[in-house]
View 1 (cartoon, rainbow, N blue to C red):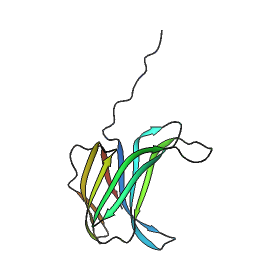
View 2: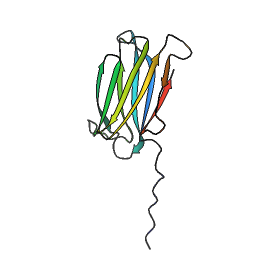
View 3: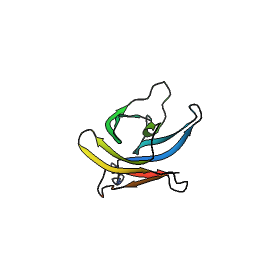
View 4: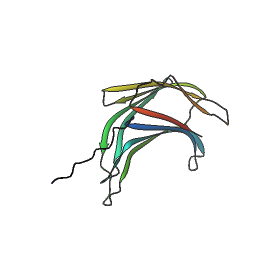
Length: 137
């Protein structure tokens, strides 16, 4: 008798985007980190997310293209990830667009403030989306 393969329940989101303000010790500058991760954990490789990014006129576009295998001989397991660093930012409002392989799109607003308690705010996030957006201090 064969055992039934149990599938985990589907996840609410495919990706998680953590947006935070960080400090680069090498460049001696603050930057905004856009850290993308899959919600799925891979058992054979810790894949690298392939994302095209474009920034113009306070609009930032991310296009999630897929995955690439990690370089090197040792394989780790874990979530696929990608980080974009935005240096030389100005405080104010930005429009962010995240496309998933030209099939799904999420648009939201990012507000950067001089506030110590809440330097990053996110607004106008759609109720139904493929990506969870989080902010961290």
